[in-house]
Length: 207
Image (tube, rainbow, N blue to C red; front, side):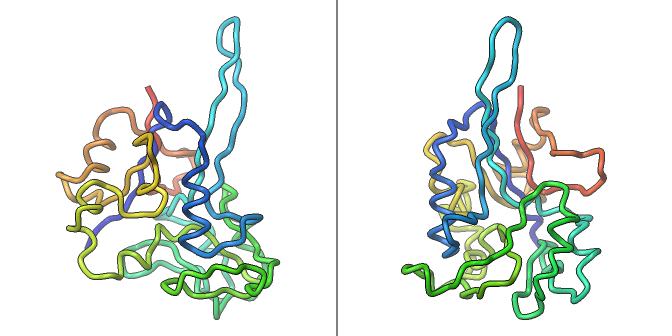
């Protein structure tokens, strides 16, 4: 069983938002509630300031608070240990949104008919449910994607495939030859709010 993970290089990310757009099209999400936001902020450095950007997909926590609080078990771990949402079980109570320390879950208040394009590989959601990044789980279900050209290059998700700056990588953390495994072992990898003990599978690279 693969241990899927994502690595985002903060020094390479330009904040172009191509990953956000690609995610919206791939997963047929409404642009007003995209699953992958790019957060921008200005940070003081010495006598000047620096513009920073942080792409924010689901952290795919191995000890996920959202799963613990879901009253209907709609939020759950799939066979590969990824956090997913069963839309048929979701009652829209938003407990998971309040529990997520990363703010990556979105409440769908938009009618599916409002979006003209729909990717047939993903389930059409209705309004009144919670959604989030799935690590493009539907792509993994298509045969042996891990060993395809995109898989070998760490370009398996829509966001990693579109990233022209080479800032986004995806793959099997347990495979010592995968791009993500080598990057996480580089000594530059950090996890957001690691002190919470959620054990995110989304890593960030910083110098």
